[in-house]
Length: 205
Length: 123
Image 1 (tube, chains in turn orange, blue):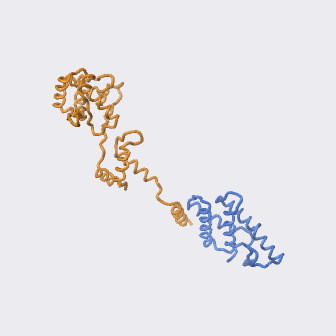
Image 2: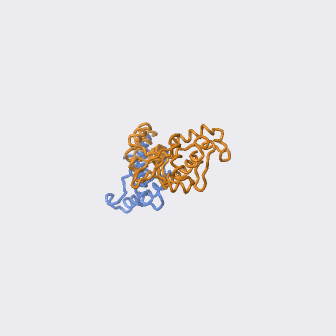
Image 3: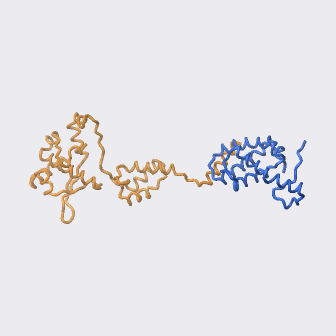
């Protein structure tokens, strides 16, 4: 739902959010969300992305002073996290999606179904977090599917966690796909299958 | 060795089952065991009941199958009709010729392939 606030050519502003955090802050947040969308599309997985003051000014007309003020407010509301890193240092942002959604849900529950011609809008967590080996192992044990967790991790690590041309969205579903694929594969050789059939047939004699 | 008419059905069915399974593997089919078992039962009964082949024995039937798979003109399929064709062809082209060579042309039985001493049917 957060993506409704973002757009490439326009700034989509939520009135209730603006009431809650301030107009300029809402504008900045919308711009950052728009930037985040761009980074997600380009393979960002940990939620951190950078933006420059000049860029923000070009997009929102907020000068650096106002930007700093707005960022302070947004941080106070726990809507974003900011850090500086790299040489030369760049400002990195992380949108606190849960907090944004919480504010949006609290403020505009009635509006949830009025957007986009009354269609229900599903909240999807866009971030994909790479699973740890232990997580995959535990999940495989839970499902009793005998999938080698290390092989699974190594396979997708080598492919940059991509499935074809798309970024993986849910590793648990990928494990299930592996499970089904393994199930379909015949493990018996042809002659073993023939022998089995021979023995089965003998029972009918 | 005894003629097919004197075979016991219960003894013959497993032998036929083995023969058809061997044939199936030889021609690379994936027919399931249940179908082969049914075919074996039907064909074993046929072998005992059928009189047009004379006093042939089971090893001659095995020869017929072996030759048909390897040198038969048509594609081998696991059907009773085909089994009949194979045995009939074997009888006509080899057993009868061998018998003629030995009994009419007086050739030595040891030198005539597929010749088998006639076995008298029990009365």
